[in-house]
Length: 166
Image 1 (cartoon, rainbow, N blue to C red):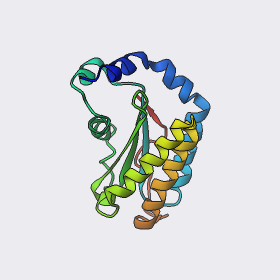
Image 2 (cartoon, rainbow, N blue to C red):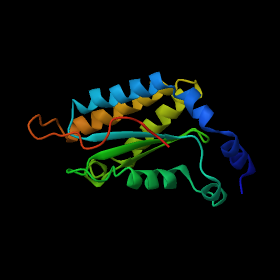
Image 3 (cartoon, rainbow, N blue to C red):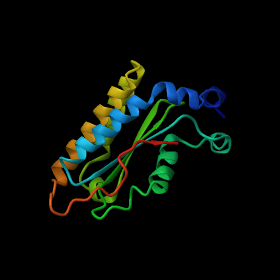
Image 4 (cartoon, one colour):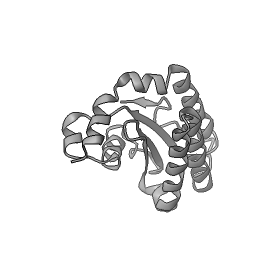
């Protein structure tokens, strides 16, 4: 059991989340998603969570496992072309996970998604949270643009663009 991690999660409350991502930052992230989705037929969802609840934390749930739960809860998998992508940030761990639905996952290797995550985490280490998320959205959007170009006639916004604050 990692007591340092448990303590970090217990001390990372909603106030940290609000300070890290104030309303103006969340609006900028939402706008970045809107702008990205104007260039491709995919769907991007950003979710941020301050810390894990006590029981999952005591079970040593990883950020990846939690991201998979959030992917399901937010129904990111439920797009017509299976091209939804979740960018999940667990603030207490400063860990980013990208979960891509099977349509885009089949085309982009895990190493690419991991590289985007590490780049975002590097920005977070410099306290550049908004910029790091927007850069991550841009990088994910480039992959979606390559494999799912925009179809102005049939493309519909299938997922909310507003960041999910959990």
